[in-house]
Length: 279
Image (cartoon, rainbow, N blue to C red; front, side):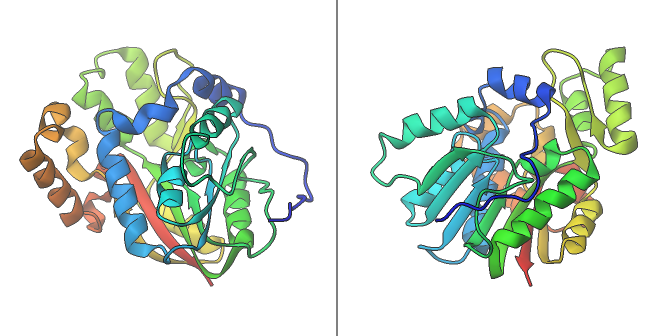
């Protein structure tokens, strides 16, 4: 794939976000706790909506390749891009041990993709939109996704919901801490999550479901659906015990599927995934 040279200078990753991912074990996140259900449901929705292999997939902000390698193993041509060098190094190390390598693996930014126009049938934005607090940056990332998608191509765009941290604090009994409550109040008020405190999730933007829908439509996409990934399972204090039991795990997945498109419950899910088509 020939490189694309953006008209604008390469954007810089926010230092607070860069520092967080330099030390946080993002490469193994989907193997722990509620993240396991998030990953299962994300894969489920990709399988439901993506065109068949060997379509070209751009996994933008794909960290160490949790979805990129999964798709490559299924016959897709996958290009992985992430702004954190440590995670790209980890992906390259993992790729060396796999039978089907990625088509490319490089450091880059969702706002200035190094790919030519209309080169892909699928774009994954499973992290960038919630780390771009400025709406102009999110619009730029979505414009880039539209540029690199072929007509009819599919975008999978993930967001953290506006109330995710409040519900997390309720579940973990963190709300009595005034500092935590202050962070929650600010993020619920305007969506901007800026904790500036060790041990909390890094700077992020928390969407209302209808807001994500509006941003995608403003970028020219046809929104085919917006789905809650975890549903009410994010509130379960004994999630790990339930997930380890195949019968109880199946029950949680069934409920998550049952309410995935219910508008009145989308905000209860910590993560939502929009599926949109390039016109």
